[in-house]
Each structure stands twice: as C-alpha cells, then as structure tokens.
Length: 68
Image 1 (cartoon, rainbow, N blue to C red):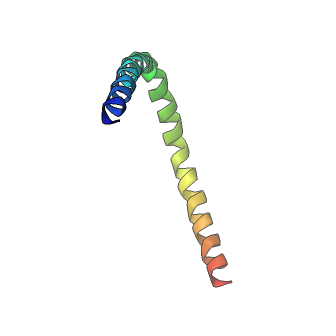
Image 2: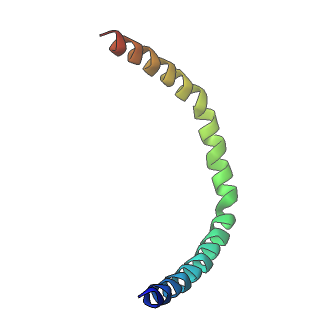
C-alpha cells in the first residue's frame, strides 16, 4: 500500500514540477508587465491618503457601533 502511495506521490510531484515550470514562465510574463504595474502602484499610492481618511471615518463608526 505504501508503495502505491509513493508512486502516486511521485506522479503528483512530477505534475507539480511541471506546474512550477509553468509558474516560472508566468512569472517571466509578469516581470514584463512590471513597468505598467509600477505605474498602477504609483496611482494607488496617490489614493492612499484618501484611504487613510476613510479608514479613520470607519474607525469612528466602529467605535459608535461598539458603544451601542
């Protein structure tokens, strides 16, 4: 029984190894998109202050709910 489990595990490992290779390929593709992602990150960074403000508002609302 253990031998069968090992054989199955080996098969799953091979499949996983193939998936890792595919993941590396996808990572390389993502690396090509990095400049665009950096631009989007900068855009998101501009929205962070607004997000903090909304977070403070939500925190105040949470306190009100806690009191109730």
